[in-house]
Length: 361
Ligand code: CUA
Image (cartoon, rainbow, N blue to C red; front, top):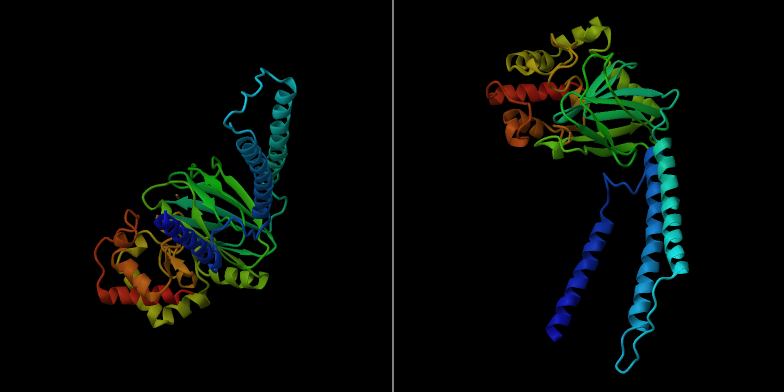
């Protein structure tokens, strides 16, 4: 008995400590409970409504159970309880109360579904989101930007996403700002294309984590994403930088000034040669290379990759050592990824390419 008390006390202490540690964690990058956008806030309100009804049901049901257990338990010598059959009033009560509770949950649920499905009349920013095994492509047709994995949006402005998949079903999910939407394979023919819409307005600047939320193959768990909510000034600066050499601007042709600046930079000139020589250009569009203007290439567009926070779909921080690790043996970092090298790269080639990729801010 003594030993058992000691054991359960230790267990309770550990549970309290674990709760404390979890509660003190500084950031909750993928929480649904700290909404920072209109869509997430609507979902959060619905969750809280449902939660408090569930609490009421729990307290009532468990309370009635405890009363029944302790007040009406069998006692030695007590007579058998009165037996009766049927009870219209009781039946009506326990039909009406659950029906009422369910309607209190169903009505806001249906309202939220409709509210979050109406496309805004005039979104400030429109983005085409394309799911790939295992990364995300973003195209801003009106702004002339093509990028990957990190979605930049301005704060307090409505953003409309039109999403489709180039291969299998994915699901775009970044819970702090918006909820989850499945992304379906679609014809590449623009006229026959089927999109899943998703719109949101973020209300706080910051970097929000997201994740593919539909099993889509061996690296589904590493199909991450970031949503970077910028101030309007930061966003405008980001757009003007990304437009340089974008396939959506002048067919990807560079401005003569930018072109000569790129060619004059020795890190970039040497790197561009290595980028072509190592075969990177077979899959990746890149500003300043012959295929900069190609849309729909197999791998992410690498123009301005140096300005991204992460590589490999949010898996690794964008540091020189991580870039080198990825270039050395991508399959050991992300097994099954389409990033298969035609041949092993030499260490000097890796160093040249890392400097080149880092230089493309
Ligand atoms: Cu894409 Cu899971």
